[in-house]
Length: 306
Image (cartoon, rainbow, N blue to C red; front, side):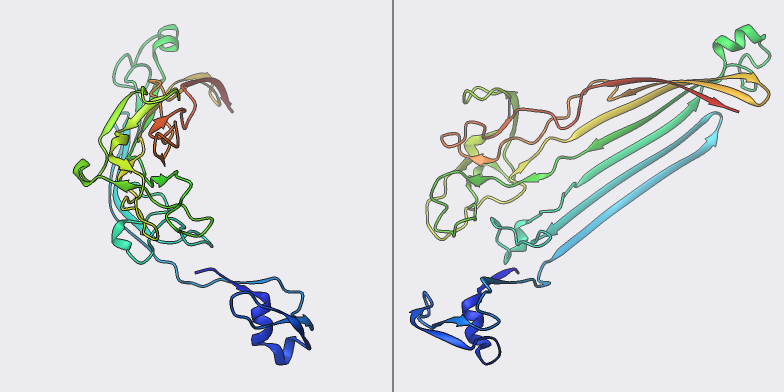
């Protein structure tokens, strides 16, 4: 856990090596010890300590199904069910989480409990070398033959969010700490998803969850009782599709025409809602005001192989 130790205090600890003169008038605030004014350590303002005290745990069930290419079709299906718990970021402890109570599910790394990815490639059975119209004349084969459809489907659960208290009083915590809001247990393990146009404030967007499940904390020097996972962000459902056609120009020359549709059905992928409680302090609390990815994109390309 990072800690900041006053350089002046350190000067006193190492006074025999790093301090050659102490002030006769100035004293350290809090301890009343002497202030070092000369020596190698006199100019040090702070000493930052880094310790390997973090904890991270990841468990998952992974299932994979592969259909090898046959009859023009190949496919890959992949599913992961997982749980991730940790109590540290790279260098800084999570400021608004109780690192001594990991049962709360303190997750700073993305905790995505469900993830499904499926991909396929299917050669339509028309044209030379395929099951239908295998002996078609060149003009017919040029139009109907050589078509291929492929796609990638992603279905991903949202991530757990932490609701912080937006009041000016952070519950007696030091500056730089954001206290958690309080959560009403009658709402269940997580706040109900409302998913409707926002009518709570002037902030335009989509009200994602029931903000009435959260309130300001009431006691100083206590964490609010909400935890990551009392609110879950929106998930992702995405389909990327491609349609291509191979045209044999010469024995060793092939032209492939390809059209791609990313987010083919234009399914919106919403960004996470505002998580600063409560509506009285933050008009955007519980409201989604944007998307995490761009809308549907179309792409046309040509590929010449020789």
